[in-house]
Amino acid sequence: MPWKNRSKVPKYSFLHHFVTRFVFMILVPSLCAWWLYENVLWTYYAENALKASQASMENSRFLLDSSLDAASQAVMALSGNREIIQYMDERSNKRRMFYGVYRNVSNFCGNLCRMTPYMDSLKIYSDSSLVLYAAPFARMEDFPLTGEELEELAGAGLRETVWMVRNVPEEEFPAIWGYQKLYTENYGRCIGYVEVQLSPRLLEEYFALVANLSGDARALYALYQDGELLCKKSVGDAEDAAPREAGQGYRSSRLEGWYENCLALPELGLHVYRMGHPSDLVALPSSNMPSILIACIILMLLGLFAGFFAKVAALSRRILDFSSHIQNSAPRRLAPFSPQERLKRGDGPDELDTLILAYNGLIQTNNSLISQIEKMELLSQEARYQALQEQIHPHFIYGTLETIRMMALQSRDRNENRKTADMIYSLSALIRYSISISSRPVTLGDELEIARHYLEIQKIRFDDRMDYRFIVEEELLGLELPSFLLQPILENAIVYGVSKTLEPCVLEVEAGEDGEGDSVLLTVSNTGLPIEAQRMEEINGLLSGDMALKEIAQRGIVCKDRPGNGLALYNIRERLNILFEGNADMHLERWERGTRTVIRIRGAWNRGGHQTGTGEGKAG
Image 1: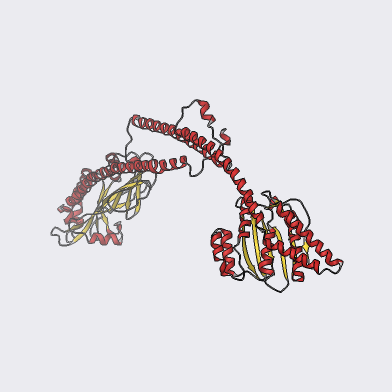
Image 2: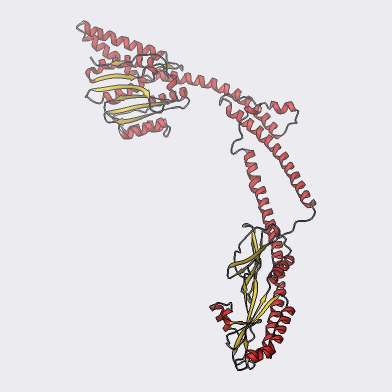
């Protein structure tokens, strides 16, 4: 079978089920397990890397701590210089002392700056009007602290240095200033302030030290004070980033793609951040052999899976072709299946071939049995139609002949003789039609013609008490129906409806489309006495198959004045089912003027012929 002519793989085929189970039971769990393993492994190594970097950053504080300690020691040495204390004391003669101590003080301060690492300057601030101000002495109005900073310095303890960080113009990194109060010899009162300035090189070299110790050549280092960025330094190709959280420690998020280490410097009011991408934390191996080996294994597994899926797809396609062959075969004529394409390739038989051979043998046996059954069914149908022919009520013929006899005895003119002749003609047509009943279908036009003869006879019997009319669409006159279909229904309408009332009655036969597009609705209505509800329920149960014919016959005593076992209607339904293969149904219903028998034939609209003409009769 050519590939383009093959059916598409259905949604719930064997291949679909297998692939779905493989994906959701093997592939997806394996990928999830691998993803989980990789994340756990990455978390472990990233945790160790971040912890090591945090420890390195904390160890790098020795540079800052040693520089700040050295500056504090220089301030303490300056505070212990007696010449400076005596010169700044208000009770001494400043002008007379200035020339004696200025040289010594200048040399002392210069030596402190040279001996202390990263110290750029040293100043002594005083608000005394008697001091002659020259470096290193400065006036208090030049003191660079704000009101809040002065309050912080005023609250500092003895020998306590207050550190502050400020940006320096044209410098990438800020400088560090330290301030300490200067007391008299007996520490009785504060007589001034000492200021030291540490070079921006201190923070620059500290950042370089942190970068060297952390081991990440692509990180971003930033210095924050009270949440504001003071400076940053990007190592390698690191992108700008902002810290996620404050506080010392390390944090990371692989999904969001960031990590950070934070080191708090409380004495300076600073936070040093190291930030970067998580992929930079775990170093890649120097050799690509493991990656190449893993890639080869993955490709080999994919090749094995592809070959396996190809075998499964071929098996699924063969099963699909086999099932399509069964579905497309006629229900009563299943044809054997031959997998020609596979046999041409010379492949050996497998389990599916064994199943196909068993199926072909079963089809041959089944076809033989079907032929025998069809022959028996034809014989059975002929027998049933013969039985139907014998079910024409003899009392109808007897009643018709008695009517003819009475009319002949009472005949006094030619008109009565004419009626007698017409009645004999209609009766002969009925008897001729009933004798020719067989399993072959007839047209609706033929049924209407024989129904007209029957109703003409009944009109003579009931005189003005009965009228009839046919309302049939012309396209349906050629519709094939079981023979002698309308006469038993019309006879029921006359026996159980018209004959039970003295009021004028109308029998109406209608045939047309029922509104569903391809179904035909055939109805026989009468305005005689309506059928009782209980009896209608019983007959409809028989016609729908919910009740058995024997049960209906036993329950016929419910309506003592209207006996009947529904055999005629039951036979009509059975003949309709045979002809239309179960696509016809029949039921009784009550309406506002009497009783209606409804026959619906599904899919029969296109079975009509091209005969034209309608029948209509009226009591004379």
